Length: 439
Image (cartoon, rainbow, N blue to C red; front, side, top):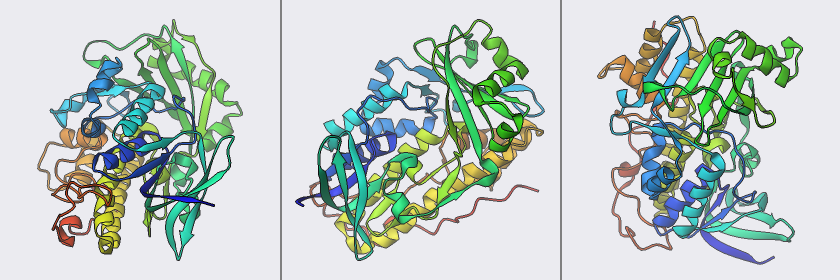
């Protein structure tokens, strides 16, 4: 079996994989991206948060995202806790990024994949990864088959798994730890003629807590709304209803979503997903890293999935060129990536668990966010709340691997003469565990 050689193989062409491949190629790294599907393809996860904007700018596609006419999302509106209905705005946390977007994932993901190609990554669609190539404990490549074709083997100095919950590489090298207290099921569909929020709330995701779960209500640029219900798996089973019937029953129990859909007409079939929240035991190992949902997924309450995936992709694209330029630094760079990733995931998971107590007021939610990201209380609690759920952290930039640009990989030219030492790549160790709840 013949084998081609690359600097990096990226498995998966979603936001994580396309962002990583594009940013690596931009640095002069020789990248192969293998994507299982043919784009465009459907995917849930329409609501973005502002932490992804910097990545879009680095990829050079923010203007293209704007040109697609996606709904601008300036914050969120909630019916949650003792305060009833309330809202937040992204500019309360980071004024330079006042809005994100509600996107059609088929269009958004296709744009990112196209950009990876433009930046120089070789992209193969309908490529099903069969297994990793592992030699002396190190991942050195993968075996894959293009639909309708034979199996091929490709080699690389490093492999990134951005294949989502399928974990094409991750399932061979790391076990999964499910968060049993966040074992939820989601059921969703799409409506036309639903009522939209107005004024300062226009474009916001709307979240309403109801007995036993919560609804999301997301406006899209074609006039439809994505509407989903999330509930614990045990609650769904105990109801004795199938998921579409449970969805309808909970709509009837709602106050606001029921009103917003009074004139709405369902225009798609129901879809569902189960057991969303998990973390892999390892995010890195010799020759490999997990990125995005391949590493872990947090409950969708704050729409962190796509943004976290893109931020992790940027981190990997910063880290891997250091490893390619100086393999002796690999373990230290991988450790920094793992610790930083776990810290952010840990904070989000901790905050989601705290927020699921719908008997508290906004002040409690704000103060808990502050305890996680700003324990010295340098900013107002409301600012820290918005900073956390935006995927941003002005006090410790997430995945900040180095103060200097990463050198290009072996196939590149820019930055190949970097003299940065290990201390430039691996700052002081970041704690793995989230901050406990304030007393």
